[in-house]
Image (tube, rainbow, N blue to C red):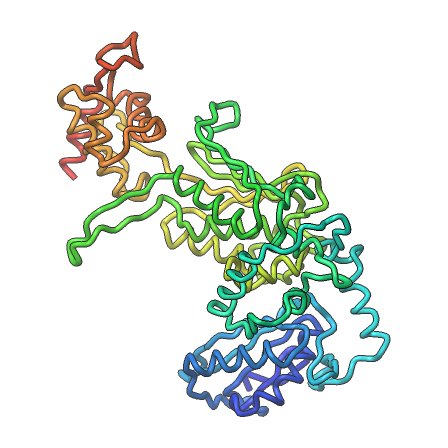
Length: 477
């Protein structure tokens, strides 16, 4: 048989057995891991069942409603022997002990048994004790209350994204308690950085710093920068927007649809994943901040704290357990769909980069930080010795190359900076000049007509002989 019930696997014929399955899911949650399959008999026979959006919603909502504290498994459809099987996957649940109908279970072999009183008390102590969970620390000096507008936005989004069963008229403290954001009826650290006011007044290091550097290291001039002092949701959004406005984006008209299409040089979902993981999993006990640095050749996301104990760098590239440093923080980000399944971030970034035709990110531990490095492609074309070969899509990106050729052709006659940027439908801004025109001057594809007055209003740019070779090579392709 391909499937057999075990300490980590439970089989059910269909979702008609959902209520019985909740005992096993509760046991899996208290035992750290387990997978339940709907559509396979207890003998391992693949039966399959009809699965609709309504089925997925019903299973997710039932689990969220009847297991306490709330359990957030991964629920998805898998095709096995050409039949649809509904899979419910539980991994490293952070809020032990879990209860179903007032009783707590654990998995022993293929059986679900009650937790002892000692086991329940131990789990409760570890869950609430800051020595085990920093994000559960009570912020005694905090008196500002909850940002109600942010909380309402979150609850609406969590209901839309994750089917979170929530009554908006319910007492605010009851809602926060169910989310694990209260400790002894007081807002804890996770609650503060998610829904607090004037957050950085109490924790000045909970910020994200973003900078765009000229060149390939931090000795270069800073061309753009922000310090994001806000809640964790806005930190992710603003940091992502900072990167997107400072990387290249190509645009073209789709000949089949006639519509304008756009593509960033890096997949924005991979960037978002890196930033969200940095916010979710950084070590907030370290007096430091998250750094996002954009260079000519790469983007780096620095998160304070090395990998959690028990996880090594080599483990990231294979199946590994998910050790959550900040489960309550990760949970609210999961509910708002800022992060996906715990322990899958590395795989997601790798896949997105490869689908984009790029190499996977680099991952390093540097000076007590975990660093994700995205390599950028070089802009512009290169002329190889005695040839007219220019980089193809695998080197600079097809649309980027076309834009370079367009500039070179346009500059057959002397053109001003403003004229070139208008030709590209870009604003006459210094940043666009640094990204579009200056690299071509540096590569000697364009030259200045007034060499000793680069900032003169009369300054013009004209194609060089080297630039003509590149332009001719592009026309021949």
